Image (tube, rainbow, N blue to C red; front, side, top):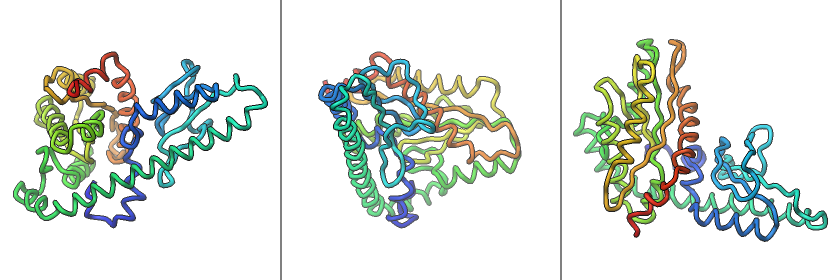
Length: 309
């Protein structure tokens, strides 16, 4: 995130767009809260990510497709940005209790917003202080590596990666596959095993991305647990095969603690007048769709938690 390059108050306002529910809330606590809320009120509860991906569903939402634009439900907001949507089905609530239940649901959305803001501020403050302490040492390492590589992973760091994006744009190369790769449950590893293991997880994913890539692939670490991969002149299905290889390698990785997993979103630049930067949000959206599918696969949670057994 390049924390030392912009003022802290500006980062607090801007960096929230990089956060998802899993960065801010422990899912087991969030799920237990929703179950208790359903039991007390008799409602069905659904919580989605900001784009509508289902995260917690308790009750009768099996056939429901969230439309966060036309029907956003109750918004959970962190520093003015919507981080989640809370939907509730109150049809089974007695009429004489509906007003109280609606008030309780409104209060729950506010509680989740406040909880998220506190978690966000704590995490950003901690990272900011760590970045300040490491600033001089990291700058030295980046210089020693020719100011191109991310010191932790060896892939391109954000600033140089953005330069490469612009070069590809100016070269009018099409098609270009744009892949957003996000590490699943990085925060879980950080919370339960500490900084050393969470850093090792980042390095492990980066190594797999490099191992499965062809020489012309451009790989950058653009955020703490986020990578972008560019494939110039991508052949039909090449990006999809690459992401499948990466995810298969993650699943095959054996370790006493780590269970690496990555969500991948693929989009394409097909017109020379398009800019790669303008396609990144679309790639992120596809990544979130894939993340929901991956994290809901049978055995995912057991594999993630195997290091604590």
